Length: 374
Image (tube, rainbow, N blue to C red; front, side, top):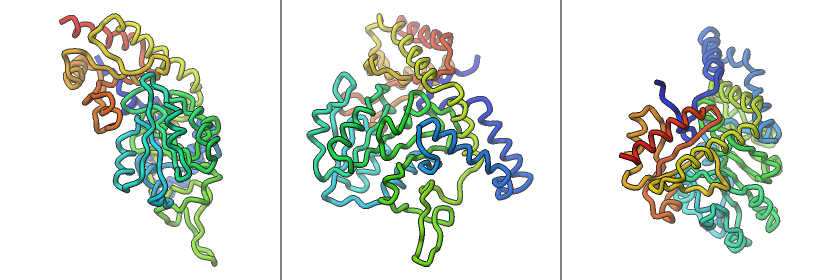
């Protein structure tokens, strides 16, 4: 029996064709060297922007390829100044790596409540936005809790109060499993990961920067890819502003292939399928009082977090691993604010994708029920 991957929120199984697209480029690179291989593959490399812009509804030049979303996040926040007076608003589901950056820079943070029903407390958000609010950052779907945040509603609310506030969305866990449309969201910045629900390779991600805010940004790292010498000094590119000369063409091609597959399948079809499978999992286990799920079923996605009375998260993880089921543990380090509020140290995370079958889910359910009945 092969391992079943229910850790798609960590790293999905790549689409068929992704690894071969990568290896095909590497074969050409082996034959001709990196520069000429890149020339020969230029059309496919440009295809990355076409595929992603189609998926998130933006312009090609608004996208920058990155080796990770954390890198893109850090580079973006280092591209402009935030004064001691100004504040940044985050929410109780903020991801740990994002929070590390804010704490390291000693920025003035305000934290908005997420209600027990999984919805953002808009009253608290309105209260915390003031004349010194520069940025509002929101995790669309959190790593440690799979509730889908009403990001479109939040975007409209923020810009109705002050259109100059930058709305930054972390779509690492949402891109590839639900519709992400930057125009509907009305966000200024959006970051995403390749290895999760997009089913691309590790070491890939992207950042979307709305055209209208590019002039406000001064990229931290400049080189010959994004900058030119002019009589007036250095002239930074208007397109793909956070890209630099050195990157992995092979991985970029692999991610492009994965996004192409998402577009062919249709993101709405994928979204419906994943939600159906999560609801099926919940339905089959709802009669067991030993199991506590932490998501509101009304805002369910592919990420399901749980605890089982009498077992630690590590015991559950190891037990399922012995049954060849891959899951993961979300702990305090992934979101200290969330876990402190919930008074939890960790949870087991089961993250389903469209390629997971009902037979696989039924096997998972059987294994959990067998454990409970021991």
